[in-house]
Length: 513
Image (tube, rainbow, N blue to C red; front, side, top):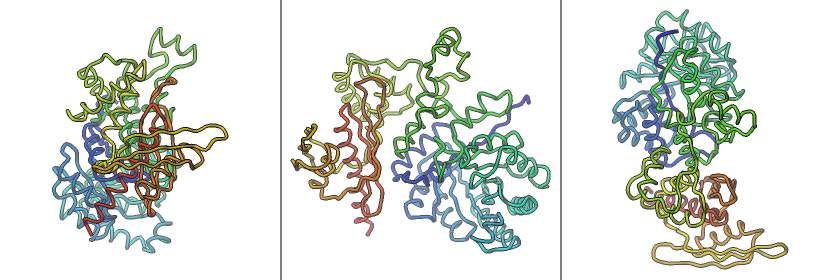
């Protein structure tokens, strides 16, 4: 291959990615991710499934109105109500796409839809036709295509293109395909569907067998022109094709794939961190491309080779994906300009107000730590820009003591408006449990902790501790995040973050009802 093909990157973090258990996002968080995807260079952003809920509709509508630079897509079943609702949400977009889908495999036809092949084709054509009446950029997906009979798959794809579909997506909905099978399926469609040249072939691969990226790349080598993927590979069950992995595979091995994308790869790590922070789904250390160990070398032989020639053990430069060459850059004597420059190099865009708030916390942290790492700075920034949008409750002070054979004691003071409330108690199984109990008594909100995680933002005994937790309240899950050198304080901040999200939801509900 000599001339590189341009592959369309279709990101579904806000739709399929949000379907990861516990990964639901509020409107502000979706807007933030949508802008980050534009900055990343994503071609198409699948912003949601408008008919699924009022919240999904609102998110797609607001993203369509506000976000510029990428095509905004909304998902719809091949049903008139779905398609009408999708267009209502998308109509203000700078560039819009309606994505309609209908299951085609035998198992779905028999058990889910209870429809014949003839009925499936008729419904698919009707869905695409209605979408085309609103929008000339229409994508059609035969759901569970990887398990659909080949002759019937060809028939449905041809009919959808005749009806006006400009993209036909071939989903491996349950992650069942193998790379060879996926490649053969795409090649078959190229060879057997007479009007295939009138549409872009796309693939949407799930990762149930850990093959989503491999299957997507196999599809590319056999003629696919679009890949559907998510940041960090999040999504239903085991997730989707990982955007950062498939993009860097094509870039690093362009000699083999002969493809290129419009992705600004230096934004991959910041985008990964953003999605992790908002969803609460952390990336494992050894995750390809964006994991903390992706460019780390511990073995002596590897270190020796790296010192002599980087390419002996690295096929990519860390700078190319958004990591920095050095991790230790700032100290307590550093100024605001240096911090702003480092934040920019880490991929964050801060307003003047945000920079001021981060700088104040940075100076406080610099007095506590001898060395400030990039991970510390990233944690402070994320704490500032991803906190709950309205802080009804804030921490004034807290004190916690515990020891072997002693009951934990907690004194917690919170501010609500102009008032301060203090709770002192000796209860619970430890300082963390006591902090939960004290918060419940002050706020009157009963909290059930479903998940609690602590991790270090950087290395060293004085590293910032990052606490992420999931709270259940009235059957709904709320995430919270807190950062501090004191893990108990980080826990209190995370609890309050979740509480503020609960209060915001209550306020929104009371206004709308």
